Length: 57
Length: 512
Image (cartoon, rainbow over all chains, first blue to last red; front, side, top):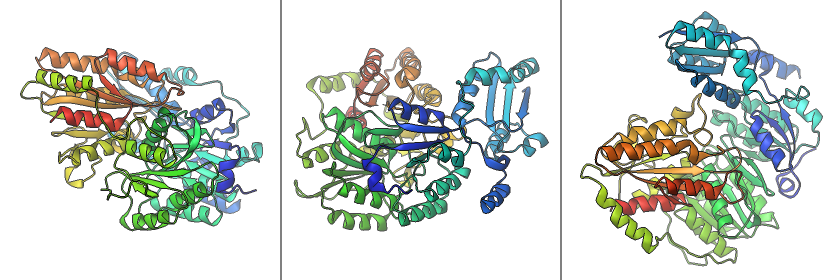
């Protein structure tokens, strides 16, 4: 499903937060639907491995 | 100096969490320096800069946690390293074991998501942003250190799909009343804004609210969007969206100088806009126009607020920066307490936009100001840590924030700079800014208060007088207590304003 810009301005925002937990917390405080992703680099952070994984997926 | 390090394989934490740990370690008596970082190449260079290197460090991967300590004795080094788990547990909030660990897992949990908010290290951020766009989500990209080539590619891809990329290096957006990143609590209303300058957008929205009006949407684009390389891809997309948005009656654009070609294209586009537009392109000189023209330029953020309110059919209490008779009397009195050596203002800014705007205010009156982020490259400081004559420093610039928290979150570096400037006998005025809102420090004034008081006392002991002027950017709805922040400043003898432009103008008047 694609949410065009104009739709984003009219509908409630629903967020996937990758990274700083405090950003998800401030969104929750504002009653926004948000999922916190405790993101870590895939493949141990090995860029070559990440490129390979991307190609496979 | 005795030093040591410990590496934990495959134990990843976000940078803000680790900076909090590092701060707690700094408080341990005998610790001289410490770093708690993930094993990325950039971080390994930072460690090498403080003398921490070796084959194990070299072999560490980006998912490996490295804790390094330099202390007065080897015993203290050993003790601190042994307490790593204690520090990590002490800093950890209750973590949900069901939290996803990848964008893909996040999407499974939230298939109806329409926005990805990304604040991971820059070297990985473009990849995750691309995934989000592929999945049909808009992107708020807080991460910096994303290449200009990646930014262009992401924005061109987003344009094809009619999706928005806010960023990279985007700190602020307000969409449908929701604050994302560093944002203030403002009422809804009819004024829309496009922010190519993050703290500028915060100042604009706060001042609109404080004047009794409201914001439809205020959307950040990231600092490079109006460069000629990117060509305003996000700015133009937001302009289209706000033009079509039934809530928005007038649109303001708050930016540092756009690229020359992009500014021409932008003005051409603005002239076809069905809604009035106010353009505040800090650092550029605005030509004059008719009072009721649909497209108006403003020189300061404050002026952009007045013009936007006027164009939206409202009335403002004032339309110029002016000082009360009391403030003018104060100016006349305070400067008599300077001694003949004191002649310079030193601005120590958390907000890059405020540093820039303040330089412009001085430049427009023919006064040269040096800076680490100068309007005119002729006046670039050779060493960002050493002021020269009048100097305004952007403490949020890269040289201060690599591996360290931004001054909006943590006042440590600004405290040190306040004390440094107070030791310079030529310093007459300190100019500071404080920024409230979501995700900023919960007590920005409190963090600097001791340093301000000490600076004034140090100067007094030398038989001199230090004037401290400040601005507080925020609203009565923000998580911090705006009135208390202002009160604390006034009790410490600081002259405080709700506007950064006014604070800078006040300093200019003091120096005349």
